[in-house]
Amino acid sequence: MLSHPLFLITGMAIVTFIPRFFPLLLLSKKEISPSLSRWMSFIPVSIFAALVASDIFFWEGTFNLNPVLNIKLIPSVLVILIALKTKSLLWSMILGILAITVMWLIV
Amino acid sequence: MNRETVASGIKASSPIMVSYIALGIACGIVLYDAGFSVSHIFIMSVLVYAGAAQFLAASMVVLGASFPSIIVMVFFLNLRHILMSASISGFVKNRSLKFLSLFGHTLSDETFGINYSKFQEGWWTPSEALVTGVSNYGTWALSTAVGGMIGSQIPINTMIMNYALIAMFLCMMVLQFVSKPHIAAAGVSIILTVALTIVLQHNIALVIATVIASFVGYYVDSIENRRKGGHKHA
Image (cartoon, rainbow over all chains, first blue to last red; front, side, top):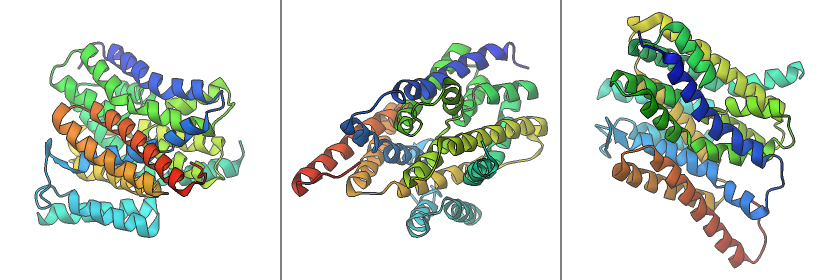
């Protein structure tokens, strides 16, 4: 067993809450200028792209564009096509899981 | 808060809840193996509620890292939430401190994604968004505790479980393809994230890439607006 894990947990809790709460508190009170809100409309798409890119192009910690070794690449192309067609989170997830499982079984 | 609000919030979060059950169990197993007791795992999920940070903590504890160094890493890992919190703030104007605290505390990547898309559809309310957040939160906390109880009795393929979330983010990205500048921002973000991750070997790459890409999107949008000579809303 770990000694004094509550110290670690408390520290983690503080550094997790601050970045999630304070922008919300500070920005939800006042009117945001049109240019700021136009800029902020580009944040979600950039975040999702970054979250995805930091995962799918890497295999076991290194950059890997070989679709046979990095089995996340082909399912990802498939998921993008499904998402464009259906606009459905659920279908994207179900078919994505199916595709990665198939890749995992055959490679 | 009426019954319809709760039902509609839970309906929106259901795909996320399903994947949180699987990933939460996996996370609980990893934390248990790292030396956390079931009650500490549950307390951590209730107070911290950040899957990526919890997985990170487990692996750093196993490597023998000090508590302060883990906390600093978690802080950097969480910087992306500043951007999420800021960009969703416009949809929860003039809410009570209690509302904002709970909404902020339960603002995971996935909760942000689903709520942001729903808010953009126009009919989503802050109450429904909070229900979505809290139901994801509760699911995660309970699932990690269950994972801790199971211990390493069941082998779980974390790569496949994790891919469920990646597939979801891919879909959320596609749902944000509302204009050419938004697609451009995504492209820039992908290239920068990969390049910076290779160079920096650190999660901060995501934050830098996101900030630069959103400025590029904004800039491309401004050029398009000027060329059309008209005003286009964000």
